[in-house]
Image (cartoon, rainbow, N blue to C red; front, side, top):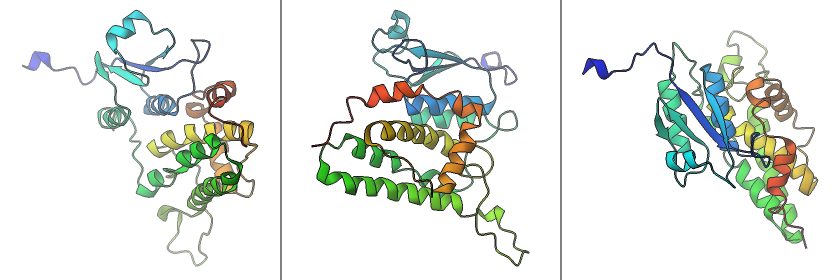
Length: 247
């Protein structure tokens, strides 16, 4: 029995399969693929990334994961296909002390951006002028909620001994100064919104939402995010057919 156990000190063999760009080689537009790419990078482990051209899936992948769309993962020769289960598996398996925990301290950090992508999707796909303003308002409301959360100090930022209350947070990310699963889930979607909404609806995140812009600028300064983003043109290409002209 003991001989079957893997050596816990041995580096795991990890291969992440992500959607390919239109050239069939570079990283394509898929927020879930980018999220897992970020998670593995932040965990500090060695891993390979393979881009999958969905228009001509290689024969070996048809055998490996028939009918499965990226992202999927092969961890020590075991196939993992469900996004949420992969995220949970990586958090439990690549754990301290060898790898950092990416679980947020605060549940609100995971919840605050949960609806923003759905509001964006409805907004950009809407072809009716009469519904446009209300959908834009709904999207802005979600951005305002995010801005308020990022502006409000977390409990550890508040000095209980200080007479003057700290009113504005200075943290870099949703849950503090380090990226967590909350950021890995939200940032790829914010990047898509920023690019696609500007291109097809001339929508920009208002400059007065300073906390959101601080958050985005901190994220783009990190390789784990900026180097896993698809090219802007890939995002624009994805939404070219979805963003119907309004009438």
